[in-house]
Length: 342
Image 1 (cartoon, helix red, strand yellow):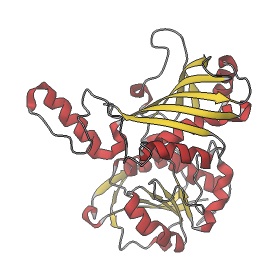
Image 2 (image 1 turned 90 degrees about the horizontal axis):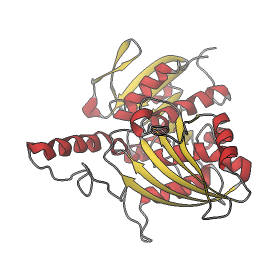
Image 3 (image 1 turned 180 degrees about the horizontal axis):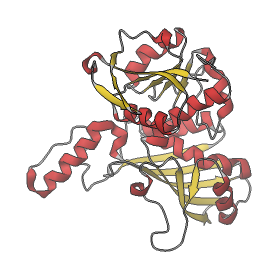
Image 4 (image 1 turned 45 degrees about the vertical axis):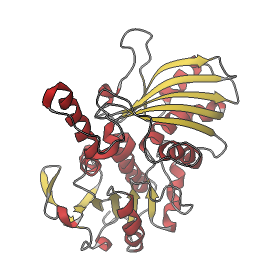
């Protein structure tokens, strides 16, 4: 069975990663199209052993494709995803535009694959926030084992989460420190080089940022509405790879040894947890990997049935492009869409 696939936002970092992962996982493609804004018309991107020329979003005929991987930002998605869905294809959207729409499933395939059947309401599936994805991948098997009551998470998020502009700003400011001239913050609110910034997205009335709010409401929608989540989201001077320090309180006892074995058997997770120098994973080592890595598993005696661990993932892969492609694979495996050819 093969499908016709369009990648919207194909010139961006996540769009290019989507094309690379479609090739890596050998997704069954009949035809593939690179689509972007008019200013990127004709820009070349690579797929497999060929070059694709970007087509204009406003002129593209979406009725000729089955799946659209959308990574062009929330405003573009709000304007286009529903219109595209009405033409027939299923849109897998990487922005925050549709995540909390009750008629749009929010999916992490290792966590809530059955929700894929709900996509027919609008022909849209939402890809969760990068920081939420890696956390719920880790929480799901633990929740099944002992039922989670509360999660407290502090994130250490790379500048890749802010796109190319964020990566450029870290690079330029790092060079400036070594005598090439000062650069003023543009993408971030304070200098990011050799610094950490406890502020991602906009502030809300209650003092939390929208990134922190997203982690809470998305976890409830994906995993369980009864789980309480408190997040502090921090931008760090790392190019790619998000890290999280996660404390979990369970309803039932679950010690670190049991948790370690459960996580080792869980899909999409690699446990690297040795109590020795280097016996853990950092963001530098996770770049280019599909798995979410778990280290530093410890009992947390400060609360009943408490557990703490360190969680690292490539935010351009599992946090964005890979999860979107895995949703496309789920559509194929579950027979949700009718393929072009069999």
